[in-house]
Length: 576
Image (tube, rainbow, N blue to C red; front, top):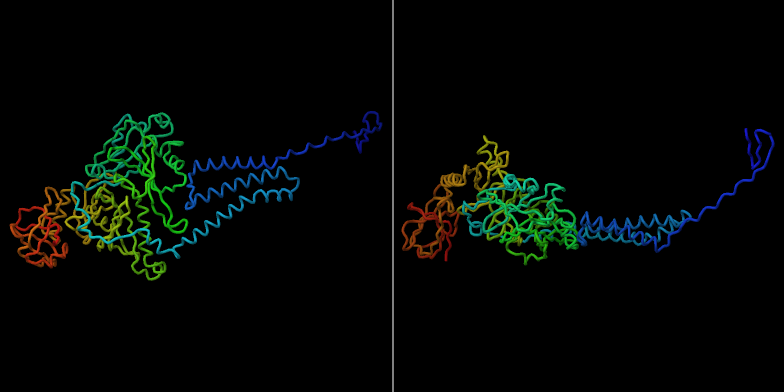
């Protein structure tokens, strides 16, 4: 065995001892120290790369009213601070020196984070509803309206009969008939209701089937969009000379959300919907919003960005400048949120918690009415106490946010839907969200009844004020006739509904010659004769209270549907 101690060792063969000096160790190379400028540059480059990637994928708005903006700034500071700490460790010779250096270099991002948190907290507190209830209630100015005179009586051959689900089924089936499109594209599951050439229609666009189909077709773009007629249920394929190049199914900078964000980095968008103008050109309408209460409360639309889906040309327009062909700037979700603020807080914050005097809210269902070349959102209004009836309803213009409230005690939409489904319960049909119609001055729910495959099979009409009056039919005409009979039987009207098949309204200005009245089934009905006119005209006091003050010799303007009967029911009456 060989022994070695302190450089002395014994040879195992001879047994002699010898001294071998230890080999000197080479000194360590000094650690390469980064200069302060170089370490700062590296930290800035890493932070910039992270910031670009985060902005590219998450698309935060650079706006003080956006919570995502503060998250973005805090993350940038965190990345910069982390880089600074790591690079500071490469320069320090001891833990104490590392802590001292890191504290100095991370001071600026630390203070920025503290400032962001302080601003966010203060901005949130000054927007609390306990302090700003009146401001929340004032987001949606509402005027009282008169339903019979302000809501036009829609012709029964103009009633939209499809909801979004049914429209999607029809569009998907139509696409399946097109061999050149079905293998490459898919129908977007959401469609948008608009007025197109004075017709209520739903429009929807196509998406690329997958990333490979996008690669094969992106050079030419999406070649068509679909228009679903909500009355005839016909689906037309509108082919384009140049394809749609900007859409949600695109990648990189042609993705519509990314395109909007990089072109308008400071705008906050709440919704991007698909519309077409009267010339059939496809557009994306992006709703631009701000926060009106504090920093983060009271969202409201202030304008829209219109993007040509083919060329990418875009412009921002304030609400007052949005063209008439645009049908939706204020989304249904935004309108309902603002009304609920009004219904809950117009009496003050504490009233919303204790007593709840006059507190109301929108119902769970809403639909759309086409009127005056605009689309109006309809929803019922009920008490926050949770009863099953409506006290009225609102109509809100989705382009201008003009809002009207119509008092009308009656059935809640869910109750009307249950009544309609109960009338045909043997078929297990499902009712669509009710559409509110003015039928002879009577607020009436109209619903389509669908089977399990989302196809419309029947139709139903329910009187809003007396939801036990339910009519169904296999066609719209049959449903109207049945509803008409029920209204006559219940003494609500005395003749045919204006606007029903074969009916046409006429207007007459005349002088009253004689006025008579009678009570029929608890309803006062006035019988009028006019100078130089044959026959008698009738109108109910419930439909026109002014008829009670008529006297012979008064001049009036009336609207009626011609009838061969001795008695002609009036649709409206106005005293001159």
